[in-house]
Image 1 (spheres, rainbow, N blue to C red):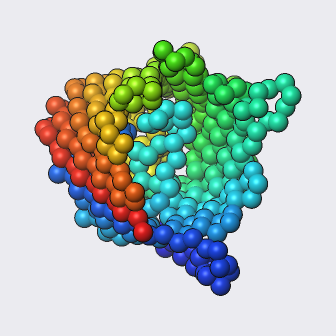
Image 2 (image 1 turned 180 degrees about the horizontal axis):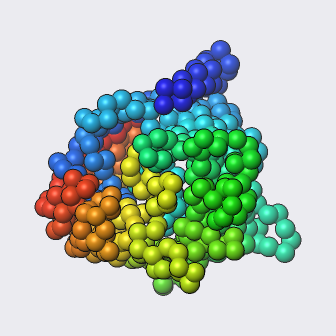
Length: 403
């Protein structure tokens, strides 16, 4: 962590030094968040940190350079540099170093593979993004490719492991998109180029590199262009293991959203279903609690799953929405029916036994010029003892101002 933060500070200083240009753009934002008690992260727009916190962000942009240094302080983790980064962009290429959340999914809320459920991953990354420029495909057709290499904290016993990831997206039309992704956890005593190559492209189910924990999958999004019924369907599937170089032991999410910006009160309504329960495969592998768990690595960062908030062996059916009742004022609401630890596994990270119930949230969001404020009230009628989450009501307040 110390070495990573030193890199960020060094790069931020040199990219933000005014002697490099007179056309620099520098901004500061200050924010705070208060939550009365910890709640299960539901990925809604009313998401709040589980710990009271304050942050100061220093952002600098210069032509193809962008950088942000964020100092976060909360009541339990003290000082962190989460959401800090240095990014360089030229043409279709961007690359950099940073510690920020990724959401590899077409869902607006979550992902089975990489999401904001845990603290950001410290990583180096490289990304390409461009249009196809083909006479056969529509003008809007485009593609992207991203590769990252980072660190997952305390995912190898009580030690850190390396995580490498690939994600490609293809949009042959304006309304249709596909994604293909893979992550691999590796490291231990075998940190070399051959292991890195195997983590990215080789079959790691058997043999010398069988210790590598690889997950992979795909997703799709389709928008129905209709003024009366503007709907979008999306889905994602991810596998914990390999069978013939293809994902097996699968989990999935699917969603349907309706959005209308032309009515008096513009509204977005989404219904989303997540299932992280895995069955025993035809060759006798997998079974309950396979997802996000591995004989060598756990698919976590700082002890929290990097994918879905319900962790392994769970389901969640979420109905949520957001309605703009004024130019600067939104109402946000959600109701989630969820089951945690369906197999009653004592080693589950959230609960030592099966729990199910409702999480209801009602929130507001105000945004004017460079000031934002949001607040919510949520209720949860079940207990998650491993995560220290109690039933009852919770109140959250969050604010941010930029200069």
